[in-house]
Length: 81
Image (tube, rainbow, N blue to C red; front, side, top):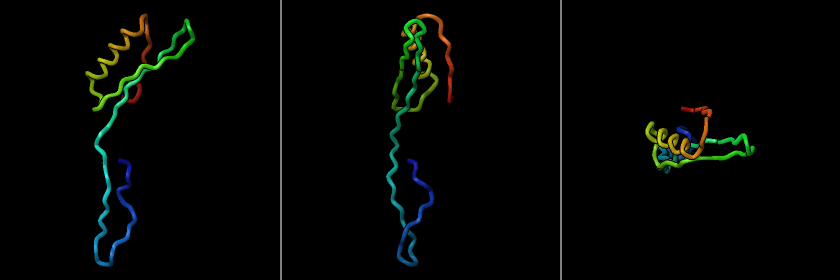
């Protein structure tokens, strides 16, 4: 996945070197939230792993599940979207 595009290698004179590389195409996407309980002074972690890229529907479903789990008002900071 993170292999350099240009690498140094050896080949017999007059022949073009052939570089073989294995590139995996499977990915995991993680969406998570850190929760803070002001009464109990505890941190929590809510996360979901997806086998595809995160879409708007996936994020909306995650937020719906998060709101069902956490009662009361929340402050949400969304990063890296």
